[in-house]
Image 1 (cartoon, rainbow, N blue to C red):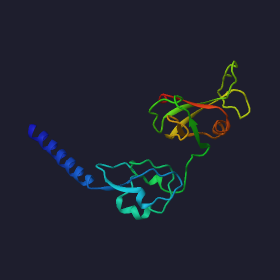
Image 2: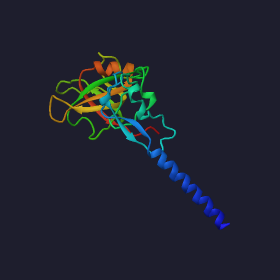
Image 3: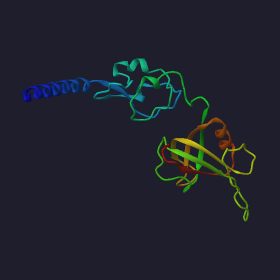
Image 4: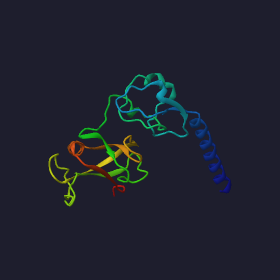
Length: 199
């Protein structure tokens, strides 16, 4: 019985090592630099990496590089990410019913270290004169022209250093189309509140 168990274990180890050696030699395409959705993919946007055990992933093999160059991206490509077949094709960004906006954020009005993909509450507080209280938030992100604070939930796409003052940021956000229009047209200071993962 012991010999039988050892024989089975040795067979499993041999197959595992063989599979690992085969898959470790497989080369796939990776993203060398950020590429926005809808942009034509250039050869310099891609690099070749080796991936062990890529089964179940729709990765693009390195030998298909010439077929990828010249096509457009369906979604934004992040530098260092592995390229998948679903990311190449007609632009599908932003998704239907959603929109992408860019907003300036002053120093101290966003948590430090926000990374792309973070869920945030966006608040736009309208200017007030001295002695006037700040109006309550409008949870429905009412159209421009109302007196309330504009509020919406969004996903952070990117954050870059602002040019106006040290510590400021220019953030790009993905959110539903109607709140996006209201937030983008609102006047006032923008604040971001980092939300935890959806439960």
